[in-house]
Image (cartoon, rainbow, N blue to C red):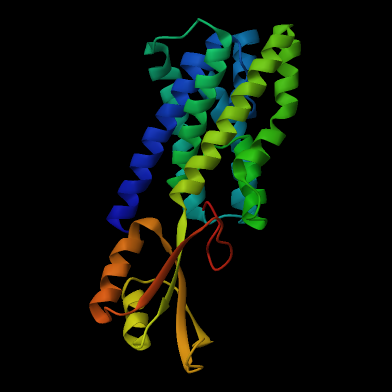
Length: 283
């Protein structure tokens, strides 16, 4: 694994887990909101028995991680990164969490901000090629097989039962309603951040120097498809290069193309979704 990749994984996971922990400990738990998933169960167990939230999340995730490792569903590197993330979440929640100020004001605000922090945190952990364990592992397993489904939406559906149970534990309907708000906001933030980070631009290039343009994409390690085209006015045969690239790389590739052919026609369109050929997966 390259040093740059390791650094990205560590940074994304540390920041993501901290944001998730803030949403859980500073907003959700103090307001009596069980935001679904293992953390939601942990909040309920903590409310009833006082058992540490972070420790419960770790213990809850062990069976699921064992299944993932045994079934070889994901690469072992991902599983071990997930183990590290789960342990870090447990330590942050139980050791750093009590030092944070807690919000005990309007419960609707608490629900919204809990969802925003937790959804943003989960997105960063996923973009760091890891996972916080618990119910979210089920969502990732489904998304691995069916990449057209959104992780945030699937996790939200799986969390409904836990949210309903929270109303029984807290003995009021408001806890269910606030928890639904938290889960919904969390799903929105997670989907938006993951989709924006994985956003692609579709580049279509028509040039007299197709081979040179093709080399530009290959030097950038971008996959392309060469199409057979025909000029609308001249009816001359022409090759057209098409490829999906990250938005951050698009401007640089355009510049290189114009350097090899300043008369090249370059069309750039936003690709709302790119699936297949290693595209469309969180991990």
